Image 1 (cartoon, one colour):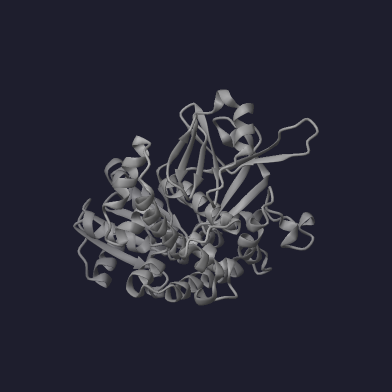
Image 2 (cartoon, helix red, strand yellow; image 1 turned 30 degrees about the vertical axis):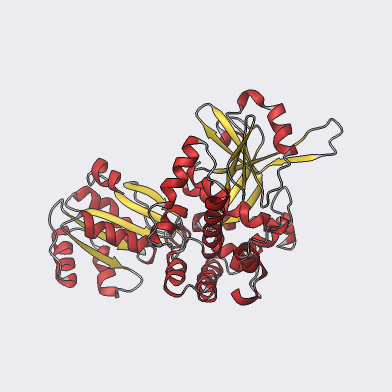
Length: 434
């Protein structure tokens, strides 16, 4: 946001994309308060029609700004003030007006909204090209620790990662306990606040259920057939099956005969889920080898994933909560670990890709690399383990097959950092540094 303000200097508006309840309005308001002499925040989900109608006629911008200053009792200063257009999808004319407001150049503009809802309300308007778009994700592990008033733990993790050294059993166990709490709570600000205020997973779970229900209601409003919401709700169960792809047919009847492109676009734009696409040739430039017909789906927030996975049980009776809190490592936690890795990679700006292959000529054995990321001209294959079990046949076969392309293979698991030749074992909380 600071880079946008400094480098664009009013030549574009800033559009903050993100899932509902991820904190877009809060961050926009804090930014405005800290970085500008004054600001006006227009929440189009709350204001009346008299304010929305101001954006229907832009022939006299002096009158528009005069009205806004009067209605919000705030003085605007040229090149020193910002106008926040919050929940802009609720006022399509304001979205269209951004082009002319930016051209006028007097003030800066920040838009917030869900792209899923924006798509629904964009009909009949001209989408402005004068926008810089950035995505906002749930709080990552470092931000979670900041919320707990802990500014020392993550620098220690970073130092161990950069120097490739183990932290020691006692320190590592303490870090894993804290990271498992992060996996359960997640990074949605309301859930984090509930954890801080009450230290009670039941209260946290109640907040997460409210967010999930809000997402499902949004999806049903966009897609009245219920297909989008059914896909969203099925993600934990489908991931737990351990298949090489998300099988739509197991969720939607006669899916092969349906055109689901609009639904996939809505789900992707909602930023409530993340797509991981199969890469047909694991090399730098994954998008050039993306197979759009093969994909896996992850929830954007792992805390929500845990709640959705055990929707019929509250936190007191949630087996997954109990296993994670009590350090009962088992294979059925695999989807949770896989989802947190996907979440952290997305927050770090990585698009998600995976790779499957057959290592023998007869084609009897399927192997899978959970995630692929690139670094310079090389790739880094990532395999996720939910326990201390360290066999890695898929990774071994992959490295034999593509040795010249690989910078270093990594296993993310719940144990301390260690080396095994070229193979690097990283505790899962270090994924936030990849």
